[in-house]
Length: 369
Image (cartoon, rainbow, N blue to C red; front, side):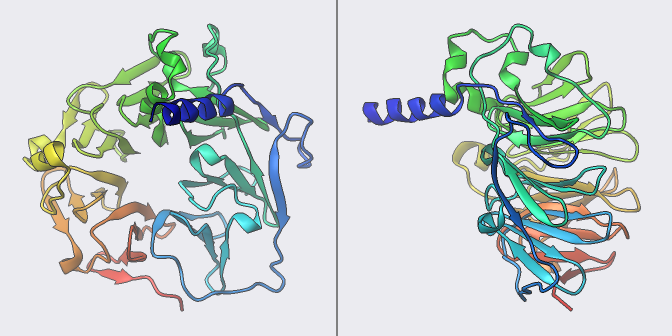
């Protein structure tokens, strides 16, 4: 067992022993210090269509052209243009088949975040995947590497985030924003507490990062502020969302729903007496609680929608919470993601039963036309 632990740490240190910047020219020709894992061209003139989508949906996104992308927890990503459904996996150029996030840049490129496995870009013709190596060397001048810019992109990473701007990738470890001894930074088990699970860039330009066990970090371009009180740092913060009023909401996997109005942090789950005390002790599920939150979004009427790991979905109008589960037509009680499309309709990606939509009255299972 001792030998195994040493081996695991050694492998982690080998993988994380340097800081790598990735750059590309405007014509997509990589510089010498770029690390493209692979590059695959996709033929859309004669697309190979499929008729089924994997049932474990991790992320949903609609691009500027109206095309939907469905990221899965192990089956790659699906592209649906309203007629054809195509599936793309590692063999097509993705860095990994687990798609944690999907974004679109100002040029129409679609970006797929796969956590520690890197980032993939699709330019409409070609998938290009990039590996970004984490580092254990913490610079005293780390603040110079942290920047916020217009049209930049942020991606999840183990122990930190990948920041993409002006054709460059930089890995930014969160641990260096706190006062931690140099000795503790050499342990991957310490760094894992800073693993990022959720990212939000708010309307004011602040970047919010939800972590595994350190609460939430806010970076305003100059300084770092950590939010850890009221149980926020007890478990992973799996979702961060800004509503139309400017409130910032945090979804914690255990402590529930939090609201930050710019001054005060409130645990709404405790306020509404919907805490799952059994989960804190034994990890037991309870479908009548608002404790293990995976996703947050807002409908066209200003209602907040909260997807949970084990208790379906909740709608919150600021006063009353309405609960939806399998018996109400929701396709699963495990809601990984909630996405609002360009028409204002909500899409629910679940852990075990695919996708369903809410039309304002009831839930409908998403099926291909």
